[in-house]
Every structure is written in C-alpha cells, then in structure tokens.
Amino acid sequence: MVLAEPVIWYPMLRQSGGQYTIPANTPDPNRPISERLEAVISWTPTTEAVGENADQQGRVSTFAVMVDIDRREFSGYPSLPIEGDRFEAEEEPRASRWLEIRRVADDDSARLIYYCAVVKP
Image (cartoon, rainbow, N blue to C red; front, side):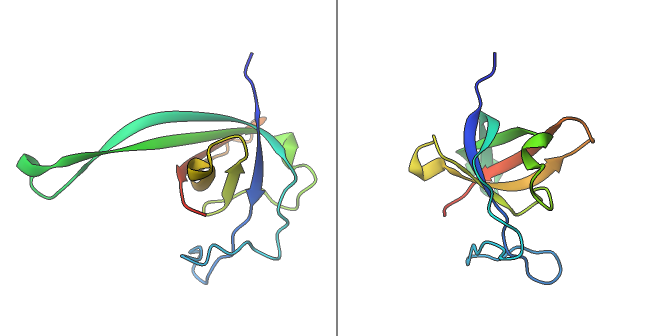
C-alpha cells in the first residue's frame, strides 16, 4: 500500500521563449492554482561533484524528487503541469516543501511522473 501526500500545483508565469521567471516566482494568472491533489512523493539522496580539478573536487548532497500523480486528479483543470511549474508538498518541512518540475514523464498512462528539484519559495 502506498500512502499519498497532499500537494498543491502552482502553474508558473513564463517569459517569451518558454523560460520561466527567475527570481520573481510568479504564478501564472491564466492557469488556476490547484486544490489539494494526492501524490506519491519519492525522495532519493544524490551527490554531485563540484570543482574544476578532479583532485580538488568536493561533493554536494542533494535530492532527486519524483512526484507521481494520477491523471484523473487534473480532470477539472484546463492543462497539465509542465516544466517550470511548482508543487508545494504540504507535509514536508518548510525548507524542502517547494518542488520545481524539471522533467515530465507522460506516456499517456494513468499516472503522470514529474521529476523535480527542491527550490526556495
């Protein structure tokens, strides 16, 4: 049995050329903010190498976050979440509750998978 967590979807405003707004983080007024949606959130710890020289590289810990949502959760909305949009994971600590979509996996199945990064509000 998988337990779902409530998330809220925030469609974000885009600039011309498909780039999302940084650092304004302004919700798109033409796409509604969602009610609570039920999602399965998976956290995977990862590390990234930083530094130019292989002898002096450091490692930075981060998380890869996957948000799995049933497609029917979006039945009342005019569109689906896209890259650059954000989810607020309500049950997570305040420092890690904002998740920005970096990649969407949509194969027309019943589940939508969003690969996200933790961002500041």
